[in-house]
Image (cartoon, rainbow, N blue to C red; front, side):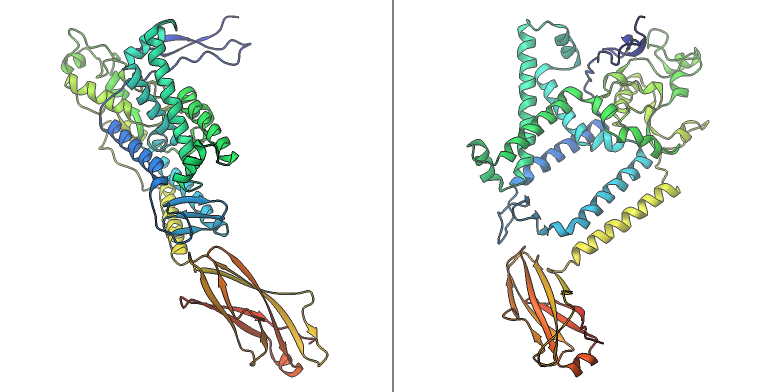
Length: 489
């Protein structure tokens, strides 16, 4: 049985027949998408985010930061020291709650943006989008604009020009992939020393394995898979429709204005002026196909809202440029909502935030961010815990006195070496025995366990139910842990 066919956007934005899978085939051959460059506010915004993101990612490991007991690097994941150095903030494994909060905030922020602006995160902020944009810039740099790249695609590999230009492009892609992976590795050590160690063969095996794996995955995602990551691999593209509302702002084609009664038509003699087109029943769409040619995922926005659309706005720039050249009003393709488009006279575009879902996301974001900032700002410079040793709960000595034992654990997370003092409140003089640990010196990031015992005569033991351990440091911070005293009663 012959394979089925469907219409898709061809090289110049026109509809061409594309082979589909037959009953015995699972896949059809992928037609590469070759986007055209475009100028406009959305393109400038995307480019600005790209350069800002690359500057932060690639330069942050090289930013110096003064530290007492760690390399002078602003951001570093100190795996041997079991800590994450983020400027003046030191995060330890026991701060896993912060990571949980950050993941929750990131998820709610994603839902919040989607409810307001559709897949705007995919179009502007996603790593896949950023690196694919960078790879496309390199492709344009070495191979030229879209027509030149299409011409090279049709040439055989025996063509010297194709071999040189495509070869140079792929070498540049490999270098960018390697640089991306190596930069990630540099976050896990002092960047200058680790860079030298990598190139001299003295780095750990994990550094080479990570660099190789990330280089391959970056190249595969940004050079080979591209739109397939957004369409088939990323789960966000599958469930984002559940977060859309009719009021959600996303990229739409105004079909009433673009098609009118007689449909779209190419601008030719007698159909160039807007009055001429309206007189013959044609809409403002001149069927130039530029909105399709600039789309990084290869869809035709005129077919309506589609799951593949990443809301990057490049088709808006393309259509507005054509409208300007034709002398027509802008906004044939624009960010708008379904509700507004269906109105007889669409209103000015504005985010629809007065809904229970959007307000819920917003309130959750504010509360969680405020709590996380508060928790980080009010974290003590040391962690402490006091536990009673329960095997046995108490011991009766030969003179009749009763002894309880306790274990005090202190962890210094102040950033410097600290001195701690331990005392007891509510006990008679001499009842607390700490051995030689009344004053404890602890290096930053280290923990110490102190064994304490409390011994009381039978009368005082019978009268005592609870007392307090008082722990202080040289900075004047004092914490109190309540402990119970067990007897035979």
